[in-house]
Amino acid sequence: MILIITLLFIFASAYIDYEHLRDNDYIESHRSRLALRTLFILAVAQGDFFIMGGMALLFMALFDAVLNKLTKMDLLYLGSTALWDIFFKKNKLLYIVVKVVSLFGGVYLLLL
Image 1 (cartoon, rainbow, N blue to C red):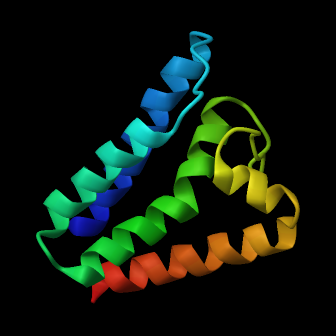
Image 2: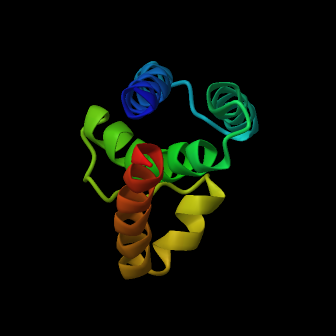
């Protein structure tokens, strides 16, 4: 059940960001989004570190790809605002490895 909740949360988060981008509402700061998403994960996990880790890893693995597909960008497109994007623009292979490890690690932790 947690896996399904996490996937719905990721898709909803990406869709909300997509709506802002579609309306030309440029996302300058990711702080409020990070805070809200962190609070959601903490509330759902209720102190279970495996669930927290699994949700965070799955979010890392899927959010960008879902948002990129919604905005009709390349699957591995990286923006220029988020620190995550700026860091990984320099090393695309590392980005892919982190995504794959996060995907499998997140699913594993949520299915424990």
